[in-house]
Amino acid sequence: MAEYWYNLETGVVEEGMVSPGYDRAGPFTSREEAARAPEIIKERSRAWAEEDAAEDK
Image (tube, rainbow, N blue to C red; front, side, top):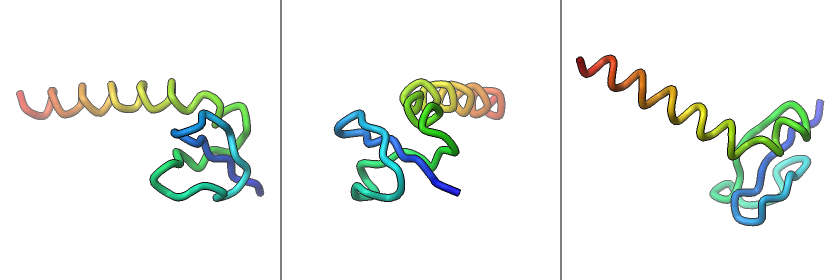
C-alpha cells in the first residue's frame, strides 16, 4: 500500500519518502488526506493543547 507525505517546505504531496524527514508530515493513506496535512496538523495540535490544559487542572 502506498504512503503519502506532505512536504512542509514546498506544500507538495509526495508518494513515498522522497524528501528529508524534517520536511515531511505523514504518512497518510491517501493523496487527498496528505493534501489536507496543514489542516490535520492544526486540528491535532488544538486537541492536544486542550487535553494538556484539562490535565493541568
